Image 1 (cartoon, rainbow, N blue to C red):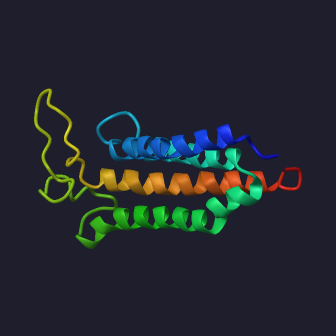
Image 2: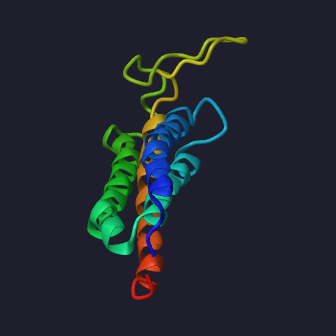
Length: 154
């Protein structure tokens, strides 16, 4: 069954805003409640919106299972590389070596009540990004698998 043009247009309009909000939650995860998993789930809800708004054939042209599996694997690979990077420098597994080095994400956190600075956290923002990529890929693959079970009926 195909949704009405109102539903499809609404989904097309809302999709970019859902993506922006999901990325906001992922990027600000080390400063606010949220992070990679929560942001990835919001991003996957945008994918779900597209899957519901279009027919099975149309939605699988937009969201491909192989692409989502590749995204999931890329997130996992980024997480593993982030975790092992400290071991290459002689520290322990997942040691936050970038936290106070002045590099990207390495500014020191000021004492007291100050405005949040995205350039703090060391490896945590990178880990949040990796988890967000992993979660959006995994949930999208699950949604596509569930949708494929009813493709004959729609």
